[in-house]
Length: 460
Image (cartoon, rainbow, N blue to C red; front, side):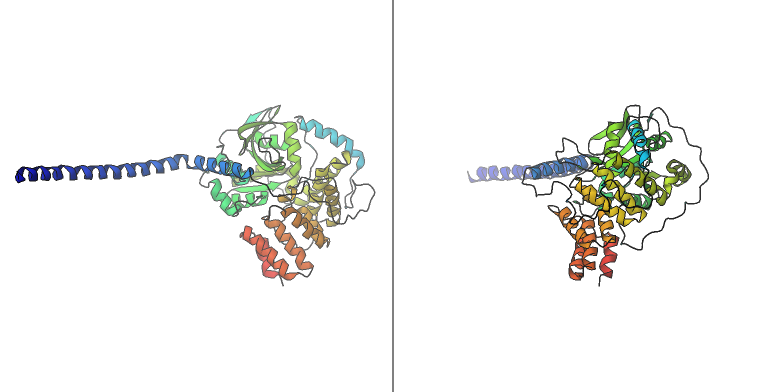
């Protein structure tokens, strides 16, 4: 009886061991298959999944108590006023008031899609270099060979742009990537672009000039201009090129209030433009009137990215606004006319100040910024435009610079430009250690900020 029992026991071992091995192999193969499937899923849906995760994360954060912030850009500590008329500031090329009504009428026609070139407008000045001597007005550049442009067409719709949804707070890099795609350049993802332009993912602003610098580093030619117009949009598109603009933005579904945003315009018709919007999605239609109202918040700033062989055509499109001094003088006149037409227009006053900074006329710029702040500007205004810091610094109002930087940082704390200008002002006030700390904070949030790097080296 022992032998049969032994045989049955041995037979059971012989059968059981291969079964365990097969189960183990099956589990291994299953794990490998799941891993390969996960990799394939990540490669195909990785961006989409990450975007959804980011969206869920920020929706959750929105449910938490939010930091306090001011309702508006704070009013100045001291207002220097040379005139009882708040729409007048002291600048060298005083406006002719009698032109106000005519220009205002032209603006209204342009906003409704009329094919007339709108008058010149002001635009923000983004200062990324340490202040130097007051600039002189450069002579106009040597004219390039003239190019016969395609006339403005009744409607245009350009193809070739690959739409893309932005990651959180990443409209600048994403819109630039979409612009690149028009030329078939898709090597750089929006994350790669952002890693260069805004190493701090919470950075609230990528300036037009930073975008231009990145485009040029990839072999493109690029230019950021102000004094844009609806006709210039039409002319650019009629000649086969998209145009990128910076605008004020307050989408109801975001429920966050006024902020800055970039759009890539790829078409237009009689009613308005077609835009590739990294936030709202592809082929957004915006009326001419709404476009102009939002665009003027950033003083009709626009960017053109193009191939080197298109240089002459771009110069013909931009015209005499290619020259900075000419552009800012026209922009200042435009802003003054708009302010005269509506003395409560805070954006017009701010635009005048920005254009006067571009002309090196800092006394007038400081006066205009004072009035703009009294008229109430959106509280995020100085996340994107830094002309007030520059003007107040140049006229020696250092305490104003510090107070404005502190107010802008309230509840945020990571705006490198505010730390930079605060550092400059603190150094002038003799607070060298505090100035050094401010420059270090600017570099903490953006190690690529060359102006802050230089200022930190030079602080005594």
